[in-house]
Image (tube, rainbow, N blue to C red):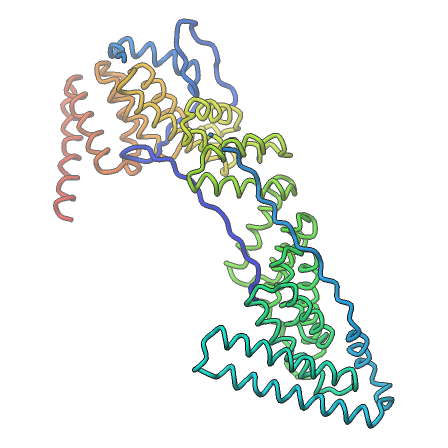
Length: 509
């Protein structure tokens, strides 16, 4: 019942790429302007630039002879339950208790009757506390007795309130009963009854933040997000007022407590699909944040709301579909992302969905579609002179494109060496995390064209740290062989020494 709303999100699906991960290479000056001309006789596989395919085809002719040989996803919308309307005669008496000018209007007979009713309630409360401590009752019987005794106590105290609305002791006892019942009802998930009780409790304890907080939590659990947000705000305001009006000399606001109130209110607005108030409250939460974790949380949700220019429904859909993909339901994720993309407002959101869709397509066996999609994304992305995307958030798109091209190349290696080389060289042209792997594969495949082979192998050797030990050994062995064929004894010796060094380090460990 006392939960404050936190959400977190999102598993990232990593695409495996054989013995090593991903790679990085010097890319063309611009990824948005690539040559699309190629000889009509050159086969251009999906996801590969035509110029890369033409160059690879030419190299292949010098190096080797060719060899022969999704469920619809939709966003689950959480439907809020109907609002609970409370309209019993008790409200009039609870409100009367706030008017201290009429205290003397209660007759002595009513006061005496109120005392008798109070004593009945107190007796039921004592029995409740005694039963709660009992250890010889099974849980079902215990809960039944608790419910009966709390119900009797509530009935008696409410009767006492209607007889004498101005008795502070009765009001406090009734508030205590409401709180106990709400907690117990909440455990049973009888939320509507709990809301009824908490609505009465906040009438009795307007100067305390906890009842507003607990009412807000129950409203949130039942999908009544607008009302939940309003009561989170009241909890915050009530707390701040209690600090402001405190009679103690030292009055200090607990910023962590206020942060949680504001964050919970923002979360409720977010689930209500209200972007502006959600953003306003997340920004307010950021003002109260003291720890790095609090700041990161508020900033994360600000970015989340702004992902598609306040299109919160799209953000929820993206997270839902990503969850489907992470659970292996790739066909449904593919269909869902394809449906979502036309509904997006911004290019950056469409780019991210293209990336997520391509990964789902690849895992769903639609490799050509995935490669083509990532190629288009790669081409339209602005890059620096070194081929790195200008917007660093796009680097993961390049990493996935390079990985997928490398993976497809490895799969094609036993079928069609020319096509495999095209994918390896396309992967080697992308500035991605483990570009050296694509350069290593290209160099190995071009072993009969020694000079071209050495060119790729030497480029891979510039970034040895991104390679696993076995890949590094493989790289150095190939460099030893190729330099010997070129008559470069000194280079061959240097790479042989590196192999020996790695082996000694492995033996020592």
